[in-house]
Image (tube, rainbow over all chains, first blue to last red; front, side):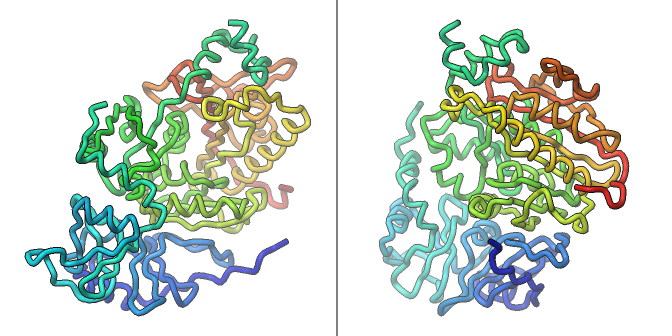
Length: 170
Length: 316
């Protein structure tokens, strides 16, 4: 019972993924030096270190990490790409407090900006979500409201964040 | 003490071979400490410790391994935000010995022949500093998602994931500098996590079949490694048929078992004999990690140096 043969990964021009991260998040193209971008299907771009040597004639299941999804109205960084490269971003980043994060983890919309003094220089599309100084994934902001694109499985661990506030001593 | 022995019929065969056998059963009866290691591709051990401390989760450093901690809190280590961010990995402390023995270096070409769920794969990638090429192979398609989840979560960028039978991993994709053969086994060393194994005596036919599989995998690993390169053969079982026996059947004059150190973590030499069976001399350089020595699970690791190129036309 052999499955359908895998399509091979093709090395692609970095202009699209690198340009997207520069335009949207202000990340310098130099951040991606030493990496190559790959595609197998139209919807997803992958990234790997450039010294990863392919296995000629042996298509891989995966190469490096998934990087950018191209389906939908806006390109979407994968969660792992957001976590890996998001610390370099200078715009379209939202700093969440605990309440906002819990709202998003429970898959509810978070009004944003939440108050008049909040940072609101966002443009519509995917934004990077930062909590306690670290980018933890993506959200979608279409003006006024933020929705979660954090992995759905995370909701089960939302209660653990409350430890920051209650600080059990054990 | 006899009561404890009655709880572990699966291990009765080792009673005379391990002099502190009762201490071993005692250790196996206790819950396993939860070990995690800070992901050097994302965070320093100090920063991770401080961050989890803030959440009320205390970490106790593992003295012999610079990245590892025992998580002392009530928390399930796989359910914290920091876990999802890939700041740490959850792995049995004793399994870290395979990483020390492999001694993966940045820029090398390395194959993990039986990779899923990817615990040792991500450890290897971290030791490679995310540089070079790490081929993560897994024969079972249903286990690829766990492997890929761990690679992505930990931010690994130097891997190719393949879904091939390890017996037949194509030789043209070698040679590798190092190959990790962390083979499927009877898992006797994992009883602290899977207590039901203590009560199940392994049928001889199954033991034989398991050992045959292991021999095929080790044989392939040797052929995929460059001369002078390193193969790590690892199991989580005490069974000599699956450990020293496999080394003795497969290595011949193609490779030799060489010493390695895990300073601060106690290992015992491989066995030269089991019943009537004598094993090759250099198996004493392999390490048996027993639960009573470091308060861990049980594990077996052999570091193997490949001596000569595989002969042409040799059967696999």
